[in-house]
Image (cartoon, rainbow, N blue to C red; front, side):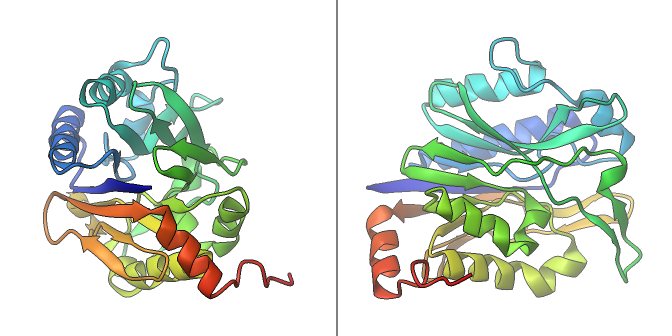
Length: 271
């Protein structure tokens, strides 16, 4: 089955309404280009001072959704497209913490799967950027594969990209494509983003759908961008440049089968 998919690139800030308008605009653009599934980047609804995400976090519930979630459930239904809501700020068990959730929504506007980011980004970078995600985010524990329009889609978020064992688990659970919504910093992104994404595609022999934040958000927080789609051979099929945009390409399960048969490394594993 050949299915067009899209990955969004945007610059989120502390302005939730402006962020949602930008995300909706890019989703509509992707749908106009024929995409049947569209991935939003991490922090698409809010990327501002840390305390703000606690104020806007919502329950992930399609029966009584909050205003942000409800808006995108309705959009998926009205356009007849599946959405992956990148890093969605979900209410945590503790009032002082949220979850960084990756939510798959079907074309009827119903939630099918929710992944909570397992690996939290606690770093002190050479450029002065210091991020301690664990101070306000509860880590997830479960590996999640969603039933997407083209087949099984493995869900992950940003920093997870540096942990290949997660993606092996996703492939073991049937994934033929991997959603990697991200807000990669400029410092790490310029050296590691393309290398890591192509490596994950090659070693899992799967498509990679990597939505991305771009540009300046607040304070010292700057993201690298370059939202892209790579095929199971590691070839970049589509990529965003500077600014907001949506990259669209085709996922083809026949290509996955061909690559996995040509170099059957997934069946040759000994560890």
